[in-house]
Amino acid sequence: MSSVIELLLYLLLIASALVAINVKDLLAAAVTTSVFSFVIAILFIEMGAVDVGFTEAVVGAGVLGVYFIMMILRTTRRTED
Amino acid sequence: MKSVGVSPIVRLACRCMARLIQIFALYVIFHGHYSPGGGFQGGALLAAAVILIRIGEGRPVSQVELSSSATLGIGSFGALLFGGVGLLALLGGGNFLQYDALPSFGLSPVGLHYWGILVIELGVALAVMAILVSIFDVLTEDDESEG
Image 1 (spheres, rainbow over the protein chains, first blue to last red):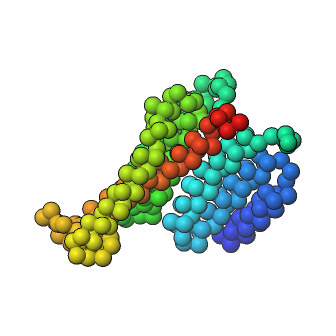
Image 2: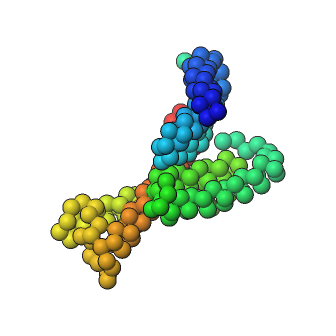
Image 3: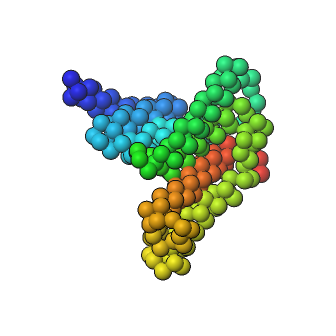
């Protein structure tokens, strides 16, 4: 049962990484990057590295997502040059 | 950031969540001896709480919580706390961050380890919180001066 959940998490990890790379919308890419960080944090904790997983969940899924979205707010769709 | 009307639900949620996150961050910092966690994770959680208030309540309220001009000073103070404990151990004749070489105020070596690690975790937490909030402030400030 546990390995089935783990397999599902790995599939979600790969899917979110592929979506984050291929999607056109920058906001969607930022959100899927946060999803990637959260899933890999769960996998770290499942593998026994609780410290690493905790750091990844706080920084990768929390603060970094906010930073990405704030940076996207400062960009424009078309270049002005 | 332009001031748009924020719904009261979002504002109330941000207020309650920020306090809960701060309490949990203090628990993570001070309980880092016995459980996973420590200075970096707790500092990042503190920064997340301050950033949540910055987003939900807007700039004037969040400046009361933690002023933008104070972040660099607090971060430097945290780094100074970390390096100060290490240099104090160096002056006491030990290696850098060798806790039992610290000047003992009637404490056993085990007690010196305990308090030394606690002070260092506090320094790391202050530095991480202040620098993460400072990065957020730089990202969100209005850039009319840059043209």
